[in-house]
Length: 114
Length: 113
Image (tube, rainbow over all chains, first blue to last red; front, side, top):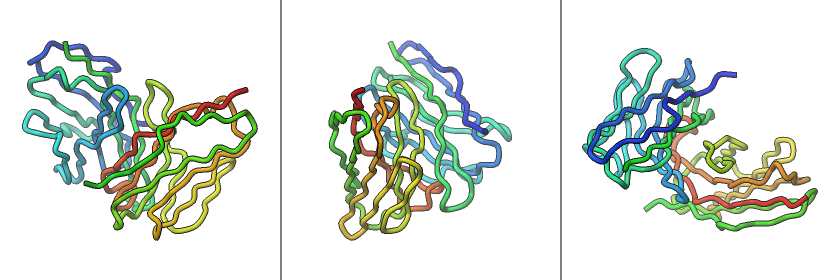
C-alpha cells in the first residue's frame, strides 16, 4: 500500500541552525501539507502546496519557514534559523485530487532544538 | 478563530463495551469531517471520514454527523485494548484532500481488558 515517507525520523539541531525536513508523498497525489505537533498539544496546520505553489499557510508559517518541491517526488520544509519553540513533531501529508479523498500522514520527523 | 472541541478524557471503557467520542466545531461552512487515531509518538491514522448528515458505518466504527448542531461523533463497538489511543477529530472547509485540516486536541481512550 502506498505511503508517505519522511526523513529523518529524528533531527537534533542547535538554536539558530537551518534544518531541512524531507517528505516523499504518495506518488499520484497532488496536494501536499506540513503540520506540526508540539509535545502534548494538538496537530497544527502549517502550509499547503498545490501546483508548485503555496495555496494556504497559517500564522505559524512565517518568514523562517519555506517549502519546496525540488523534483517530482520530494517535498521539503526548511526552517532557516531554528528556535527552541520549533521543537515538535513535523508531519507531512498528501492528498489525491478528488474532493472526497483525504490526507494521509507520514510517520513524522521529531525535531529537537537545543 | 475556527475551533474544534473535544473532551480530552481520558475515557475509560471495559473491553467489549461501546466507546463514544464527541466533537463540536465552530465553523458552519465546514464540509468534511474526519476521525484520526494517534498512538503515542506516532502519526495520525485515518479511521473514518464523513461528509453528509447521518451515520456512516465501517466495521466496528460508526461516525455520526449533525451539521445543524455542528456535532460529529465516533462510536467504537466491541472495544479492544488495541483501540487504546488518542482519537483526533478534524474538519476542513474544502474537500478532504484539498484544504487544511483543523484538529481538536483529541480524546484519550483507554480500553481495559
